[in-house]
Amino acid sequence: MADEKVFVLAELDEGGGLSKLTLELMGLGARLASETGGELDAVLLGEDVGASAAELATLGASLVSAADHPSLGKYNPDPYLEVLVRLLEPQDAFTLLAGHTPMGQDLAPRLAFALEAGLVTDCVAVEPGQQAGGPVFVKPVFGGNALASNVIKTPRRLATVRARVGSAPESAASGGEFVALEAPTAEPPIRSLGRTTEDRGVKLEDCRVVVAGGRGMGGAEGFGALEELAGLLGGAVGASRPPCDSGWIPASAQVGITGTIVAPDIYFAVAISGSSQHLSGMSESGKIIAINQDPEAYIFKVSDYGAVGDWKQVLPALTEALKHHIS
Ligand SMILES: Cc1cc2nc3c(=O)[nH]c(=O)nc-3n(C[C@H](O)[C@H](O)[C@H](O)COP(=O)(O)OP(=O)(O)OC[C@H]3O[C@@H](n4cnc5c(N)ncnc54)[C@H](O)[C@@H]3O)c2cc1C
Image (cartoon, rainbow, N blue to C red):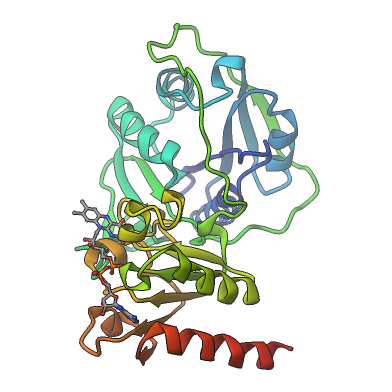
């Protein structure tokens, strides 16, 4: 795999700038490329992407390939696929890193099929793995209870990578070159009629502290106490699925296999039992602190620290103690 290209598929955030995950992928891609003697290239599709393409060139990309067209303004699988296949088909061997985002999860399997490439989704680590014959893609399996290390045997390799796996590179002076990709030609069979976003002001996956509550919070009021602790620590409130299903907190707060996948430095699991579906979304957190009244709750098996007790007593005491410590 020496000298092979590493591509990063860039994504824009709601504000139109490069997403935080894209910056992390550029750091990860640069490390992979430097350890194999290959070149790091970035690919960006969208509308009015000139400034973001220029930024990619300052983040270590030797070549920034950008397609700028109204039909690419919002993710739409067919035009995105058309542009990417045209770019990547001439490449016999490469590694492409995409974010494990809604777009990455939808696009990567389509791209893998079209290019006959091997794909590992949901990676929590990507190691150069010279001896293994290619990068080693690590992903959680069995509901987050184990990690599987995968090597892709096909010369074209794709991976979707979770947030906070890589770290953003230092910006350097612009050095990369630019290539304008041809706009898609075909009329997309899917047309977007509208878009509804639920803006909670924070992206859970970007937070260093997540304070999550479960069914045992008993109702929406309980989440007020979690907000106080999260606010104190500069974090955000998350939840297991039942509070979201019950409408105690918006669905965007759900952590888990069908929610957001997070890996903060500190994850508080308050009145959460620790189902495999929940653990899938937070088991890679730096430190897990559980509060549960049931000493047998499974969450304690995966926690670094735990308090057995009613959250109504433990949480205010913890918040007060932290207030004194912080002030
Ligand atoms: C296909 C599928 C996908 C799913 N996806 C997800 C997902 O993405 N995320 C997710 O979270 N779940 C998901 N689930 C649901 C999952 O299976 C569990 O039902 C859910 O995670 C349980 O949530 P919980 O831990 O909050 O509730 P419970 O399992 O009911 O646990 C509540 C906990 O609160 C404790 N407790 C109660 N009162 C107090 C108190 N006063 N003080 C302290 N502790 C207290 C109890 O001891 C208990 O441990 C999914 C299920 C399916 C089938």
